[in-house]
Image (cartoon, rainbow, N blue to C red; front, side):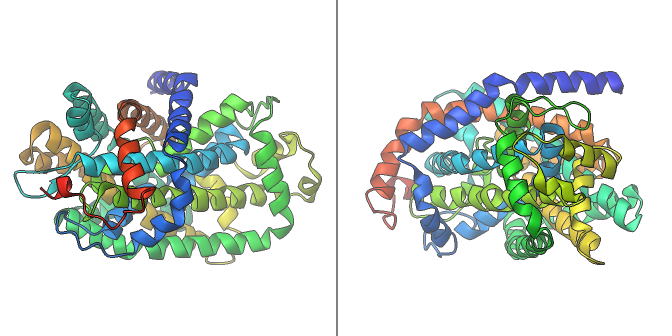
Length: 474
């Protein structure tokens, strides 16, 4: 097992080296500039997300599609993932995660646009789309579409099932001392019951749970920040300075050079908001929308809520909580801060991301632990539902609709098995499959950027968001 873990770590390090970071951030920057900063329209995007679209084509509402996508993205990446990024890459990883989110809004916008632009109606009568269809029909590269679909189906066993189940069972065991097998069995049964109803059933559950769970979690974070008021500024200062520090810190976490902080911050940012991953377009394609740009804007708002808001709050909560363990932390200078490292070593037996998050929420008397478990359970549970749809669409593209029924059983087995797998191995696998998914999707975005520019200029900057795309209605 140690050898397998070592090999997986080496593969992950290779995939998440300079080339991937340059490709991901480069695509974010390229699309931000090429599309004339669509981030400026974030409030329009939020308004559209709660506005009913009377288009007849589509399976779910725009908000239903957004809620399902948010359900898949607002998960352990926001809670455990941020803690893991801090543990492995230092506090500076939080800033890189946030930067990835801000710039990633443009990429998520582009993904949503292409998803609707190239979507098709299946033989069973439901709307299907995503990067594989953009690759096949937009770039005439079906082989690349097949690769993306294969990576997506495999990624669902990491980011979409085992990671989520593992996070739920680990915290339930630590807080309530419930056996991980029992937790895994309960989660598996609940997921199976929802999946029976298909995308419409999943969208309804996610529409009901996502706003509620996000609100409860944010309220808990705000309360912790109120308790940590004296350490908020030192935490923000440490996050910003360590993101660009060349000082290498040994011991508690891997280090804090720019590359290490960027690697884990960007990787966890991608895991959290999935901008560039190509997953959200798989459900965005099913939305009822007048034109591709409307749904593109709605999709982009998901990255704003997920990373720019929730991940940022989580990062400040964890770092400020660690600093609050010692009053000397408030006088820390602009370096990475060996005190931060020392505090981690004193107050945690290991650098597990879930442990760091639990330490922060323990500041809330009595209900802190249960609140964290509830938040993580709902976040992770809905993430599993969202990724079930993603992977089903990928399998349908590869093998047809009948194969989906068999795949669902394999997916449920992965959910159950994930509750007892080593967390570090699970995260490593998730990072590997995320990278493999991202590569063909990012290339599609770059090579089809002319299509993105044309529709964006017409509908967004031409103030024609309420206009119906006649080609799409055919």
